[in-house]
Length: 424
Image (tube, rainbow, N blue to C red):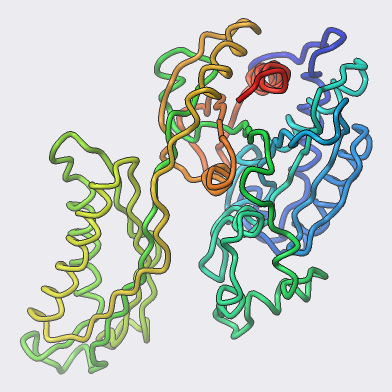
């Protein structure tokens, strides 16, 4: 830690309390896993959310849990009939993840509510603080479970998704004590919220390179995810001539390299990225030619045209490799989420708020997806970023300074005050 913790003045978030809450939450990890792993549905995740509930209650929030496991803390406003202002994020992690991705947003939102309550500052409208269920991709291949549910985009068909052990998503939700058969009552109707705000670590290095402390997000990248299955033929690795092989892994290797080339194609000035992040091989034995391979591929960009063209490029690639290598290749698009623009009025409000608390805000897009992208379907949405050291994220080295977390919370509080008073 390169900066010491400082005490908060009355009426502003406490850096000491914010940091203590983050480090306390980081204690909940899955045994035997790298980093700070706390995946959705794990025992560590379930236990950690009891702590989140306690934090909410100690901040003066009335806490409920909806049918899909979203934790919602409510603080009343002077006019309870007004649509609520919602602030949230998530507390699950990827495998081998860090201590800040998502957690900063939840802990800071709770601290904002606590500051309002203890300072006797009463908002015009209700304030909701939300810890959304399972933002990170999970073993069912679906991310942002909680925010999908509240916007009506977690469906009965999703409940039939199966993990590698043959368990369905619906069964897992029931096992956790929630009610997937009651998805309708978890839904928030369009127009029922005043606005949605989310504080998050950048997960990149633009703020650090620019020497800025607060980022105002302009847009959230769209993501297209696909699974590619390759069927070859197992044969003896020592006796089968090269020209007679139907090697699934060779085809997979070609697709991996070609996908990288697809991502590097920035024609027309539109930028994006392409990644093969998952590869399974069978029988995975040194002296047997691979019979089957499966790849997990994703494309990301804030430019819809780039995503559309690169998706087509990937489909053409799969067709070509199947034809040239005499293999059976199948591409299935698992999910396609379009890019989302952040609300212009909220961006301006967040920029003014950041300046008011002494920051020099910097506008930038988000290459990572967030719960905010789903909430944007039903309400004006805005996001604040704080720096990530070295741009590192989704790894144990993920880091933001205590002072950066506190400045983010102060910017969030000022934004809440200003947005509450505004007529959006």
